[in-house]
Amino acid sequence: MQFLTIRPVLLELFSGPHMIWLVIIVLVFFGGKKIPELAKGLGKGIREFNDAKDGIKNEIESGMKDKEKIQSPTGSQTTSNNA
Image (cartoon, rainbow, N blue to C red; front, side, top):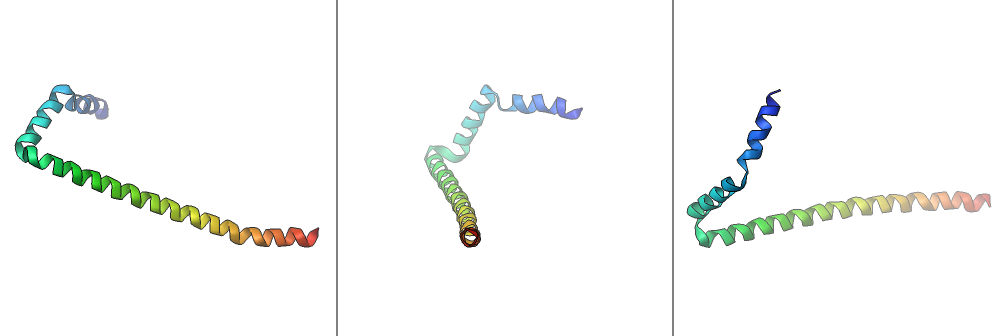
């Protein structure tokens, strides 16, 4: 039951005026010169994460293809012997 009362508060936390204040506070703390550096670092981190994710996906797919290659020659040999 508490979840129902907390959820609207979280939605109101990130409304328009609050986002404007958040941007102003970030500008005051980091300054105009540091924000591009922070954005560049964030973009680089996201890019590295996506590259790692794609690498793992490719490894899994190549492992599945290798497994199919190993299994298919034995299957084709049994069918060619029976024919």
